Image 1 (tube, rainbow, N blue to C red):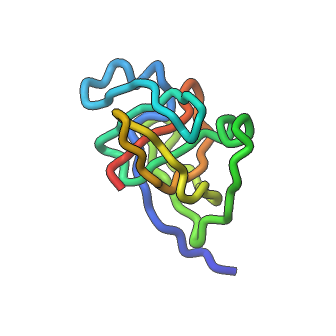
Image 2: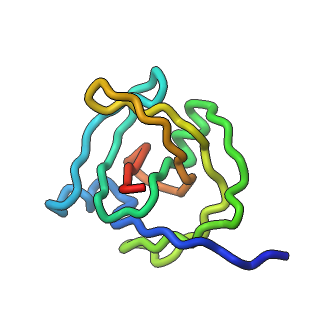
Image 3: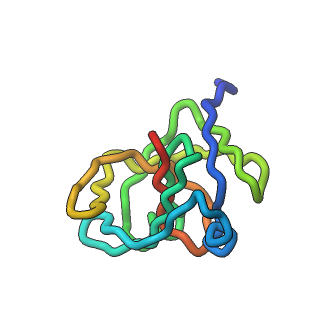
Length: 115
């Protein structure tokens, strides 16, 4: 069994706490043809998607190899084991294809980091 994990960092997993941090910007973007609630987290090393959003939009997931230990300010560390690859996110009429690591998040669909 491989116990190696990569590392990631995200500052907020809860939209209510994010509003108090001036370094974070919230808004709405398109994920494919679907409008989603997004947090732009300039301190996050990767981009993330909530399990609920994955389920609602019926997105495909693949195992994250190796799994990623994500450090958060609210929950300490969380092991992320799945990723949605090449997701089309449209911001200001520009579409980016990014990998979204799946995390248990509340009140947010997507966190866009600086990956």
